[in-house]
Image 1 (cartoon, rainbow, N blue to C red):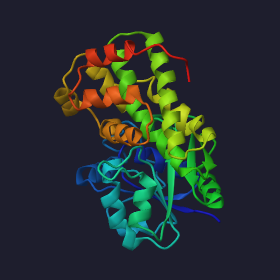
Image 2 (cartoon, rainbow, N blue to C red; image 1 turned 45 degrees about the vertical axis):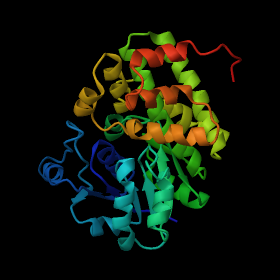
Image 3 (cartoon, helix red, strand yellow; image 1 turned 90 degrees about the horizontal axis):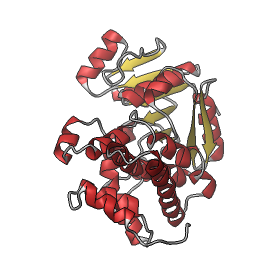
Length: 329
């Protein structure tokens, strides 16, 4: 089983980076972009507006016709989590049976509480859902800096073949069949990264950041267990690995979003000036799902409360610091 023709749906920073990675792996790559302005910029400059200074590989074909992208042997869906449903619904009639549709968004759909592979399964039941996630910044991947991620599919042979198709000397996908575990890691870490950014913006110090990452990881693991994730996935690249990366650098959009809040900007100011931070949309649904399963997630709950305006940053921090002493779990 081989995948020689790869399409990337979405030419933002991450989509452009993955197109470069696939081309570097020797695949024939099609990059589709819906935004007319960005598509024109890509065609003229070979560069995404969302990833300035990084040239798109010459072996990547840029298209505006989604049907042309749908003819690929595997598609990377690099669109925001909250628009995964309309994109997959539009793609469904165009893709052949068994074609892998690989979600590259890190979030949970609001309202339905669906994970990305569930949305793919609902809208394109004849296709094969998969998920790619892990500690990776778009600029690093686009430039060919060493990066390792996790690619999960329900069929182990397909997961392995996809990892082989996308892998190169500098981009190493590890394959898995634990789609749910990979999705949970990506979704939860974005919420926790907002909390880490708040801590940094507030100037609470490296010790506080380390404590938040560690206790946040405990929350991620509890949530993962409740929803059937495998322990090795949660402690792997798409769980702990991605959490550490996104809680440690302003390159993370979620971290930067939280950092602005910690520095005193209002929610409206942050939302007006920030790039897409998936954790902001995921936080309330993550907390709702945790509550329904009886999973304790105080850090995620504090982030959600700050984002819905019911608690101030100062009060949220005080609430976490004054929680009762307990044994570590």
